Structure formats: structure tokens, C-alpha cells
Image (tube, rainbow, N blue to C red; front, side, top):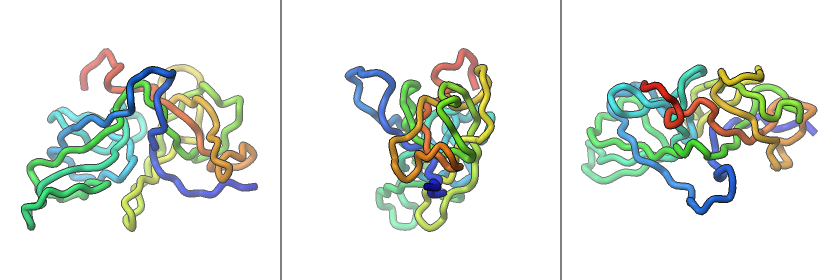
Length: 187
């Protein structure tokens, strides 16, 4: 059965290992970004101390799970699952699944088999769905050995709608291979 093609970005599903730490979200400023950041979009740290949407090749921080800000038109505290470009609020914060040992589920742009487990690949970024603001980021269909890629494949999803390794759009379990919090370099 063919997999359904419905990318959703990096969906946090739990941590590597069985430690006691609960999945938490860290709060980061969204200061000067001009890009819309969709729910579950991969994000990166930027030099002004905030975050913005990440592209292939960027050092990743995690995935966006929502934003909080004071609406400039109504002066009311507002929570949203996404950040819209052009938001002029001065207090926008993003909630990020940023644990370096977090596991994520993501759809592949190509096919994946058991032979691809523990290989690495970059993300393939496409702007998200403007109807519900959910990410359309996927893992690239180009996988390699070595360490120079953003994500490491840990397994095939258990989702019966997207675990057919004989066709494209397989959902895979990954962790961030090139993570800001594990990097020896600054941004």
C-alpha cells in the first residue's frame, strides 16, 4: 500500500533512552525574523539571540511547538501554533522542543528501507500549509554515511499509513545529528 503524502515537519515523540526527564519546551525570543515559522518547522538559533526557521545545511535547534505574544491590536496575551511574518509584537517567544536527545518523527521525501537506519540526511524545507499553519518540512531522500547532515535516522515509523518501505513518503524516526546545543562552535 502506498504511503500518504502529508508532510508535517519534526513531530517530537520522546527522548532517546529511558531517563526520567519529561519532554519539555524551552522558550526562545523571536526578534527580527521576517519568515513565517509553521508548527513543527525545524528552527535554528540566530545571532540576535532568537530563533528563525531553518533550511537544509543549518545547525538545528529543534522544532517549533507554538508562540506566545501580546497582540498589538488588542493588547491581549495570544498563543498560536505558528509565527506569522510581519508580527510587530515586541515580546514574541517561541516554544521549542530543543533537547539534543529528543526523537522526532518526520516524513521522507524519498523511500527508506532498513538499510538506511543510522544514516544521516538534511531536511528538505517547503513552506508550510497556510490553512492550518503546519510544517511541510521533510527529510531529504538523499541519505549518507558520515556526520555531515542535520538528521540521523533511528528507525521506521510504526504508523500503518506511512511505514511501507516499498514506496516514497515513509515516516521515519530521527534525532538531530547537527544540534546547536551539542556543537562545539557558536553561531
